[in-house]
Image (tube, rainbow, N blue to C red; front, top):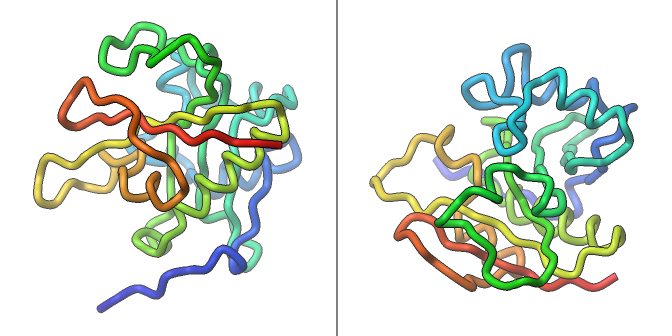
Length: 185
């Protein structure tokens, strides 16, 4: 059975702010999004640190809402905020230009395969453009199996990034392209 795609006008996007922390918790569930994750793996922290980050006012990502309910999350911040990226050979910088990095995409199960990721990526790029970003980068997973389990796709799929206006700029691993989108205020 085909699932109805959602249009961008059916969704509302909001930055993760202190007042929206309960929505993050509701979306991620009691134990975290995928496999207990609290979107801090690349920052080497946990749920408590994530809550503190949101409460600090840093706006470390963006939530998508449908009919008033939080349905999806995209973590996005300046590349230097992610310890993991600083050590990665596969995802090392393409050049010396400052970029903002998408480190996580999470879409709740009933909304998967409905176009939410591409809408969320566009909204995230627009949000950080207002904060001074000029380049947004993502590191999606190119599935190597016929049916890759959803929890292993927390970095998104290249097709979603392409639909959101990104283009591939490097690939140092068969399964991990580096994709970019230039943004303007």
